[in-house]
Length: 495
Ligand SMILES: *Cc1c(COP(=O)(O)O)cnc(C)c1O
Image 1: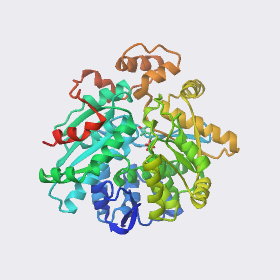
Image 2: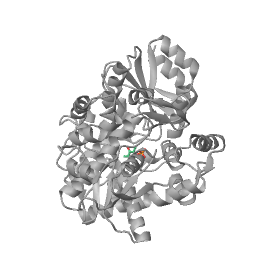
Image 3: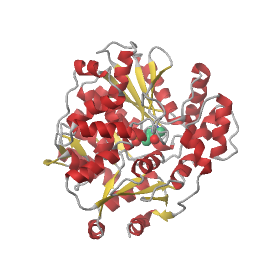
Image 4: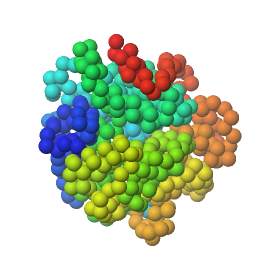
């Protein structure tokens, strides 16, 4: 399988290239040249496999420079019983006959980012070896909260790698921040940015396109790569769990093989839902992809109107990992929907850069309508939903997942389509204790950590161990930087 850039499809890259580079030199994102075909028979044959085996089955055709046995080793390391607290890795929780939460937060950092970031370091270090790359890699991450910690956990103490994480100073929860600033490992760095997530992400993008810096770092024996969801090595492991979820629904007889399901994903950077789209494009029987946003509803408007316009007020919400106005992975979808037209894709991205907005042509819009449905849910409603789901089903969900659940209900109500639906449950409720407790009508006047105990006592549920252990950890990183000076932080880190 070869990969192309969304902004120049005339050059072909290997999987190892795409994974080590992260982003193409022309600013485009790597996409597979063709998608492997998933037949109903192959889906059926996966039903009796473990999650790790399903990973090998799905990922292998995308990674033909790796052997199945290599990928098998990566899968068993990434999805091991020491990192994940359930053997199913990504279990399904049914609350009624047709509504299935796909729990993606059983990994070391209690958010779905682990599903990809436990795998990416293995793919990346193996790619360095395959390419006989002499330089070491420095992973730069801009995080809206969950990616940073998941990347730190994935890359800590991994040979030939360093990792530096930037997070928006005022845009992450207490627990998220504490998870990052207490990170252990000899090759890690963490720094706050005085701005919001888009500032941090733009800063990182600028650093990536800085040729002089590239040469300076190369002289020191480093090159930069990304663990953001723009890296193909992040997206690929995410395709697996949608297929795996479908297999589990078949296996437990909730659906028959071949039945269509809808998939609803609380969305920020458009990575997770794009993985679901790829699963659909490969042949997984998904009918609608329901894109759920919070008050930063730029994607809802885009899906409904065909105009993407980031010129709008930015809201800090209780689902901070979705507080994003530029959804980077959308570029991959534009490329697919324009019939792999790199100049059309480039044009949209140039307009976005210049004026903050673009409008897609009729063909792209038609495809959007065919595959996607968009809706959003504000903070007030999000809290009501957390409370309602807890009361009705005795099931605790986090604010991101609550946004997904609410938008699925909108969809069902507006369209009358009540087909079985999978909701991506993207974080443990314990990661957002203050919002969850306040949704349940409790006081939240204590620190984030005390609230973990309070939520456990109130609901009789067990918090994830890595979160309860935070209280014994030392703060290692307290640096903060204006957004204009992120480059200097990188230079200092790689001195
Ligand atoms: C990252 C994240 C999201 C958004 O995922 P994207 O791939 O950026 O769309 C949603 N919920 C949680 C909890 C997250 O960490």
